Length: 155
Image (tube, rainbow, N blue to C red):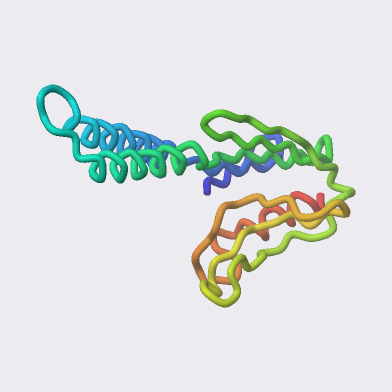
């Protein structure tokens, strides 16, 4: 996650995964081509190889399409958080007034299997708005994200 303190006193948080997305989609194409290659021409088609190759390609493509890029701007002048979430085929945007944010916390995702996997969330009256993807660490505030957000909200 990239944290940027802007000259206008706003705070921008960006989390992107372009390399991972491209890698997943490239893997999907490679698996599909490898699976289909045995069925082209005079070769005898192995249905098991074709099926598992296409299943693997579909899973890799689904992962690449599901990866989400997030962009949050905390604007103290407007006293609003503007956010954008992008996936391969969709874009969602929204805003949350500072007055609706009651806290900034880390939420544990899988308390029994992976106790150190957390997400940074804005606690609002309508529910949590997750700012980050999973963070695998036991450090209380990695990269100072929570503290930076709280400082902007307090202005």
